[in-house]
Amino acid sequence: MTIRFDAVPPLDPKVAAFVGGSHAMLVGNAWLPAASGKTLDVVDPSNGRIIAAVPAGDSADVDLAVQAARKAIDGPWSKMVPAERARLIWKLADLIDANVDMLATLNSYESGKPIGDSRNGEVPFTAETFRYYAGWATKINGETMTINAPGDWHAYTRREPVGVVGQIIPWNFPLSMLAWKVAPALAAGCTIVLKPAEQTPLGALYFGKLVQDAGFPEGVVNILTGFGETVGAAMSAHPNIDKVAFTGSTEVGRLIARAATGNLKKVSLELGGKAPTIVLGDADIDMAVAGASSAAFFNAGQSCGAGTRFFVHKKIYDKVMSGIAERAEKLKLGAGLDPATELGPVVSQQQMERITRLISEGRSDGAEIVTGGARAGHVGYFVKPTVISRTRPDMSVIREEIFGPVACAMPFDDDDLDKLAKDANDTEYGLAASIWTNNLGAAHRLAAKIKSGTVWVNCHNFNDVTMPFGGFKQSGWGRELGEQALQLYTETKTVAIRLP
Ligand code: NDP
Image (cartoon, rainbow, N blue to C red; front, side, top):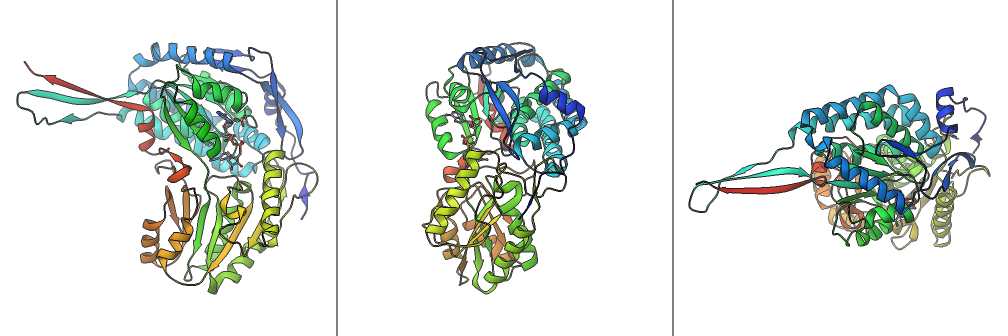
């Protein structure tokens, strides 16, 4: 398996100027270095080279950003009528579209994902998410209640913004994770302190420029770069932040929930997953092979919804497994910025080491490595797309979130849907699942039995801005996207009036 290094086109001069320029954090209307003066390096995961340095903020910077966000929520932002907020959010969406090349290049440069996925997928989805929530800004309504008590009453509810929200996002989908959080918070009228992941701050900082260009009042969106242990922890514990929204590991989700108890801030968490991908005996094999491969290898497997536990009916097991292995072996590995790349590097050395460690554990536990199974090359953080067969439920490859291009499979040999659901549900996670079948009845029955926030049928990793996304069990609290995300960013106030 070869990796192409020689086909990365030179950076567009505008992108090169931004990446190579000096970077600062957006606090209020100002671009500031960290109060400590410290910086952190941003690395190109395709070769391990440093491409930029951004401020490494800490709690002093969090205090400043929270003050700016607090001032904004008590200032012109709260006086704007919803239609004005909607127009600003829509304008931001238009600016994202107008800057698609810049944003897509930054996104792929710092995360390693294929440029086509950024340009044709993630960035347009980001703009669409802002547009969708621009529409919601004018439709956040309360209700009137018919009161049972004697006398004349008028009782109604208002939906009010939660207040200042802290949003901590990961590196796997840096822009769409930003949009899933920022867009509904703006629609609801909240103000924001956002922390992108240490690996992927550049796209978020450029987004900050677009927020200013759109004309948002100062302090509505503040963007702090830095580490989770400093900036993220200070945000989670901050007494003047009313809500924290997080996407990332279940382990850090627990830390955030604990830190939030100080002022009992609201918490929403979108955490890890270990999605079962269930291929029933009657499935369209070609469709299942293509879909299951994409479930495992899309974004180099760095997706919370990635399909990693494959349950494949015994009668088609060998055919499906050889089909997935064949597709894995044909994937073109290369830098995210090479337009021909189908599988980029994983985001960091740490992730590469974690993935290869888990694969080795699978091997020593007795699983069969059908293809892949190791780092690819010696430069950058590439992992060979890997297919692991003959796994058992107790193996760490089946229990832990791998977050790499690794498909782990086991056959099943009867059509007892209760047993199949029990095996699929045998995990601490409950984020997503997919079922591959032509039997509509089996699809519906199984979908009802699977304990996860999303069940896909004959598709995987299909997200639409209208569809709520989030987890059962240890995959999180709350739902992002769709109308439900607005509940994360609004409080309901009841007003009861006794009529004189
Ligand atoms: P983390 O959960 O550590 O990172 C996600 C975000 O949380 C980052 O912005 C990170 O900051 C921040 N963070 C880290 N520690 C704290 C803290 N104590 N308080 C507040 N915020 C914090 O994930 P990793 O990057 O370490 O990846 C490890 C594993 O997590 C992956 O292998 C995968 O299993 C899972 N993961 C799941 C994701 C999902 O979509 N559900 C996304 C990313 C990872 P910093 O920039 O310093 O890392």
